[in-house]
Image (cartoon, rainbow over all chains, first blue to last red; front, side, top):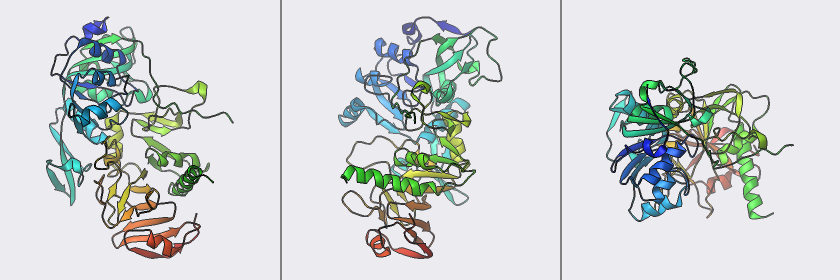
Length: 231
Length: 224
C-alpha cells in the first residue's frame, strides 16, 4: 500500500533545496543512517533541519554540515560537533535552541494539529526573549509554537507495507512524533516484514503517518561506549 | 595526592551524599556528568527507578562487554542496560512524565545557584553555546530539584550567590544544594545551612558562600 523504495537516492529525491526536514534520533541512536547518507550525496542545499542533535563530525547529520547543506538547525544540544561550532562562529549556520522537552512537544503538536502550547520550561531564561508569557494559577508559562516539516525521516526496527512501525529500545526517542509531523514521512527500517506479521497491539507508529519505506542495514555507531568490567 | 585524584574524590563525596536524597520507591532523573555518578552509590535495599529523558524508565547498570546494545543509551549517550522494571517511551512522552511532575526527584549539576533558587547550568557568555538539552524542562518537572556542585569555582569564588551572573536555566527552581562542603536548602526565608561536611566549619561555609546563610537549628556537623 505504501511506496517501498529499494534505492536510498530515490527515496530522498523529493527533498528539494530550501526544504525543512525533521530527522529522528537522540545522539546517534535511532538515526536513519542511510537516508542521511543519501541526502549528503544528493546535493540538496539550504536545508532547515529539525533534530535533537546534529550528529558528530563524520557521521549522521554532521555529514550534511560538512557539505554545507544546512542553513538553519533547530535542536536542543549540538555540542558533539566541531564543524557545527565553526559554522556558527562564522555566521554560516543559524541555530535555534529549544529545550529538549519543548522540542519534543513542538513536534508532537505539529503532528497533532495544535498550533502552540504553554510550557514552564524556559521562563526567565534567554530563550524566553520575544516569546509570549502568560500566567496560569499564579505560575508563568512560555508560548511555544508547533513544528512541522516538508519531509520527515525516521528509523525503525521493523515496518510493514502499511507503514506500521516498531522501534527498538531507546532508538524510539523522537521518531514517533517526527513521523507524525512530516507532510511526507520516509521510514528507514532495519527489517521490512510481511503484511500481518506485526501485532497491532505492539505497533508504536500507526501506518497513517508514513508515506514510504525503505529497508537499510544500520552501522549503529556508538558515541560513548561505557562498559562494566567483570569483577 | 594529585590534584586530579583530589577532584575525583571530591566528586565521589558529593555523589555519595546526594544518594541520601533518594528514598525507596522514588522515580529519579539524574543529570549528565557528576549526577550520573550517584547511581554507583545507591544502597542495595533501596528500590527506585531511574528515568532517562531519551525515553527509558528504568536505567540498569553499565553493560558487560558482550551485552552492549547500540540502541540502548542514557541521556549522556553512554551505553547502559535496562533494569528489570524498565519501559521505553518516546521523547515527547518522556518529557510529559517530567513536566507532569511524576518524578519524585531530579539531581542535576550546577554552575551557579542564587539564594531564591535560580539555577544557571547551561551557558557561559562568550563561549560556544552547545544547548540546554533537557535541563530547562527537568527543573520545572520533578517534585524536588537537588543541585550538586563544588562549593566554589576553580578560582575559589562562590558558586552560591545572591543573584546568578550567568544566564538562567530556570527561575526559583532549586530546593536543595549539595556541595563538597555543605548541604543548603532554599527556603522562603533564604538559604538555610543544614549540614556541614567533615573538614569544614560553619564559619568557613559562610565565608565561601556568596549569600547570607541561616543556620538550621538542627544543623548537622561532620555530616559526610
